[in-house]
Image (cartoon, helix red, strand yellow):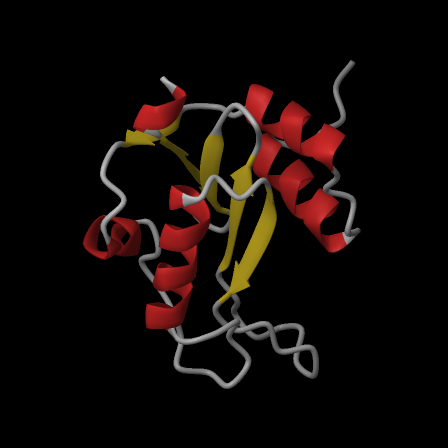
Length: 128
């Protein structure tokens, strides 16, 4: 059966409908197409996954705060789904927004750049 959506369109739909649950997160990470493996989680390496971050007042937080939070959630293996927006302006839905998602399950960690359709599997030595 085909839905006519690609993986990233479906992921964005889940996000916009607030439908990312523990079970759907497990399904998402099991079906990630072509993820680049990231072994180093320094701020410099994590910053490479976020090529565009606006200075807009509508971003999730400053890029430094986002990178620090990502590092902490990855290091602590904090299970959950975490969303980051570079310019989520609800007053102007046509404003360009880069959306990023971190999904941490009991077995794996993935970071998604929705607009660029990129996935990163973050290796955690303690899980291997």
